[in-house]
Image (cartoon, rainbow, N blue to C red; front, top):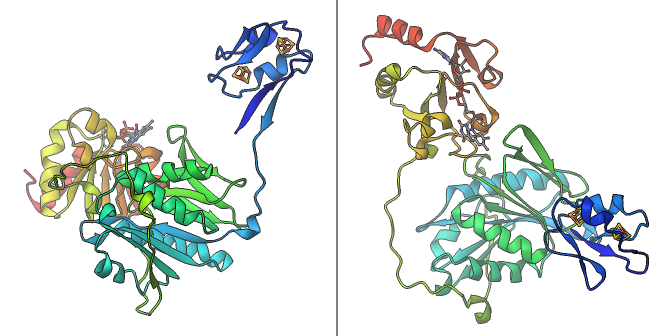
Length: 392
Ligand SMILES: Cc1cc2nc3c(=O)[nH]c(=O)nc-3n(C[C@H](O)[C@H](O)[C@H](O)COP(=O)(O)OP(=O)(O)OC[C@H]3O[C@@H](n4cnc5c(N)ncnc54)[C@H](O)[C@@H]3O)c2cc1C
Ligand code: SF4
Ligand code: SF4
């Protein structure tokens, strides 16, 4: 970030900058040009000023990259276990760390964690840092951010990875803001450069491009990653992962949130954990939906939907696959009448076997399908029934 500075000695209050500003961020106050909080630092006024009386001053402190090493994963707890997404982040962190021989550690916050954290041993971690306190028994963003910021600011981690869960999505920006560092949410791919820069890749501009985001001017580099996007760490069955309990300053545990009661809601089932999936896309005539449900039953598969099907009220949002839905990593996934927009494929392209049926030979889904068939879905279902019996 930076700030807009006006050199009042040079300025003759000609007001050309005010006209140039599309955000109404400039005005005359007490005979001087004044800038307000609407300024987007777009630079139009800088270009317009004939006297070079306005400039954007970059607020970049130079960091010494060489001082920053290692990767910290913030684990998530799900009831009385470490959430699976934590192991996926550890797996990814270990791959990234191999590029520069960095160490990977994990931080776990909660209460009565002794048994839980033992399950993190044997995955190739350096340290398992444990913050165990009754005040951490439920997630309160301000307390978790206090504790983690205090801990991380005493270290020089190059990268901090946080699960893109409901909790992680509020925790990550709270910590990043305190560090004044960047944060890339929902990364679909991460790459490590030799100089320590983390290339954070994710769909951007409505999924029309894959953006490669760098945060070269601040540390730690922070990213969140959704469940099922990265490969789970492989259990090595060794003694790796030194468990270290960290004492927490009582002042850090003070929260502005008073939790009076906690109700455990039954977990709504969703498509995330399905291993065999048939996806109904917009190309499937509604009259064929019952046959596809019949097929799913025969193949012991779960039905997933593209977003238009959810918007039409045909499928539940919990079963929508894609960027604004759930991510799946199925053993096999069969897409029917699905075009293969990147916003959809970003949520399923890590599946082991991708099968697609579409009547358009140029449909993008064929670019990622392991096996594709150019066919009309209804005719294909007819053929199935002829060979294997009714699907109704
Ligand atoms: C910010 C953002 C987030 C988004 N998030 C998601 C998301 O999470 N999930 C998601 O799915 N989408 C998402 N979208 C929408 C996405 O861009 C696509 O519009 C959507 O995936 C298209 O769904 P579809 O493939 O079912 O429909 P269409 O794109 O309409 O494709 C239908 C396909 O069916 C084929 N077809 C038609 N008739 C037949 C037939 N008889 N037999 C065989 N094939 C046939 C057509 O050739 C076509 O390829 C998002 C968009 C934005 C901007
Ligand atoms: S354009 Fe330049 S000289 Fe004119 S009012 Fe703006 S800052 Fe002052
Ligand atoms: S930098 Fe852009 S937004 Fe800010 S005052 Fe100048 S023209 Fe307006």
